[in-house]
Image 1 (spheres, helix red, strand yellow):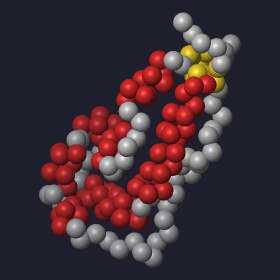
Image 2 (cartoon, one colour):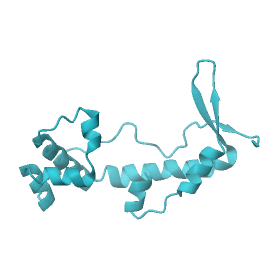
Image 3 (tube, helix red, strand yellow):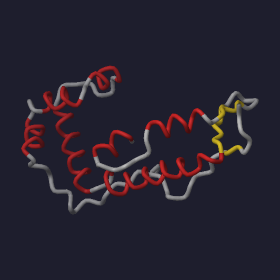
Length: 147
């Protein structure tokens, strides 16, 4: 999300704030060996800011109609490549630059790079069912100060 907010020219919390958030948190392991992060109460504003920015990014960037059009065109172009996208190592081997270079060799990729994308105005927008809400989720906080 830091990458996305940077390129959207949004003033998201800094890495220092995120590192501080986890530096002051504690990991509690229960009897089933399940770990739960507990955050100090004074970090609530930072946590709230993270969730609010995530909600903003879903509402205004990730689910924006233009983003969805470009995403669909990229998928069409990727399907024209003779690449097994289900292989994680292959998928992770592509950078932005190598993916653009690869799709520039197929017709759908050439259309995308020309800006000749499909019109999706008649299609319903897809929304991520796991998109955040502005309500702060139940986050376990602790009150005492750790040394």
